[in-house]
Image 1 (spheres, one colour):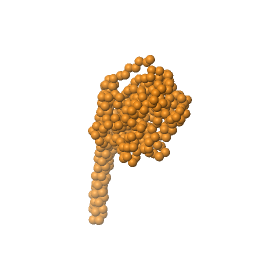
Image 2: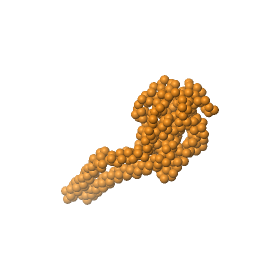
Image 3: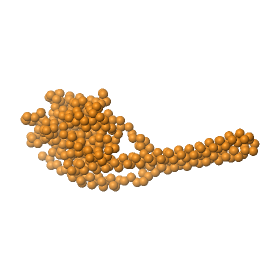
Image 4: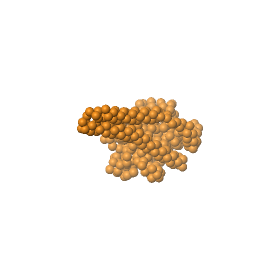
Length: 379
């Protein structure tokens, strides 16, 4: 058998902290300094133009004052007054542009600081209970995996698993543990929606467990129980034999808009965690590194020997030791030739899987969400 060594969460965090400290952005980098200089030059040019208009109007008024009538003098005065107003409004415009540019940047900085604090709190949750890491990923997955591209309903937007009936779906059994452990973080950061918190926690957990960095964007909103999706949108462990189970996997993921490669990449998250008889009815972990994000799931599928488990529970497969398990929906990835080719790719190349998973998981978490660029990032 293989020997697996799991690195300390704290050592990984220390290395990331040291790395981030050494890569601080210097003042004026990313073109910010040059953009600031450009705005200043525009402001000076506008001011000079305004002064020139006022002076020209004044000279014209003075040279024609002796020959023009009082009415003409009044017109010239009004022209000069308008020019003065133009100068004032021009200056105010420059000030407004500068203020508008500064305010969003300050707000964005504040939001970034909040998310960093949220991330620290999530990491502490996983530090205190490593088994919570896989559960946070499952929460993010299940809150997102109810999306239906035809109706545009479901998905992470809304965080409707807070309510019945969705909270009581059989597929969501045990996820109250993850929701409850995140509640103090929500109270400390009330400006963050539940929908954003749950999906962000999943991304942080993946990275904390040695997985890839998944791009994440805020912007989800919370909704009421009337927005709960119907039951049956999450995958079951089996669906009546190899052919029916394989078709079930495709039906679930095609409904959301995923292709076969994305399906195999996402199911690889079964490298984490384990099944519990009091929740799903199934029992056991998929790998021996259940709190480490790795391509071991694909290697076990291909290299281990799987036989149908003899017990009183639902159909599942076990390895010769009886310590590891696979669901029929896992076995579908090697039963089906179109799925299997991706299993073989990811078993050989973990970096490739990390890249594909990160993109597919971001897509999963953003299904049904309006992820337009925040207004403060326009500048």
